[in-house]
Length: 354
Image (tube, rainbow, N blue to C red; front, side, top):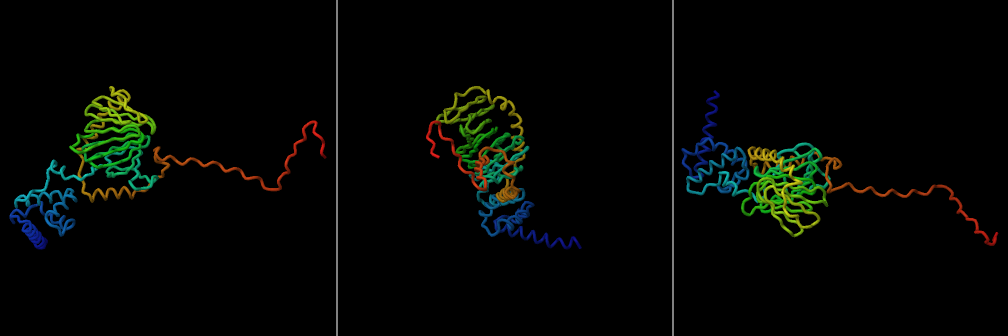
């Protein structure tokens, strides 16, 4: 009974597969493919009623573990009928990436808080791993907190404790992070032509082409320091002057003055010597990175926005200090009959006018 009842559904599925193949101009024998099953489901649920090029674009935008197989099957059908297949290799996929980088929190340790872009300055939530970032986000790490940000599994930025960082831009042509106070360490993969990656502090701007670097800002009006660890070069600008750092070099600047001449690592040497742990985390992030569809990124973002807010008094940071206490009011005069004014005695030798 069970076997008899399943045959019509199998027959119906094969018929749908044949119809799909006919619509795409493929040979019926090839259309019955294990990869085409999820394709029918995804087209019907996510990308129905579209032309073939629009369907392929839709599937790429919604790509996950299921739709990737579907897209590869449709690419094969397109290639057999003489059309140009859509990119499916990792190298080709890079060419179709969006103008903005996909940046996500991939590790959280201790107390780390985040203010999502557009929220009031005092509405923070606890950071959780997997949260996507957007332009305007602000991250604050407490005295016991650190966090790692991965940019598409290729660049890792580690936020140290007692650090306040904001995301100025995630655009490939001008990615920029702003470290108001604290320090970060980063392993930045070599950038493609037309891409840029900068780290800004109140004192300096570091432009990176692909390197291992450390950036610190001890106080809002204090010196900013930049150091290169074992590879790459960094351009550091302050006060309209530019210096270039090579491996195992550092510089600093303060108050809009030009950076000091590059010198061997000294102030940042301890941090540089501990860089091996960050390299290990960067390798782990690259191995475990998975591209997410825009829909999944939006859902993860919405989940972060739905988290309960943390009282601003529990959030570290110096950019929004608590308001200064108001001056105490002057005491009100005592109630009752006022005392008569005091009369001083006349000076000696003055005539008596009584």
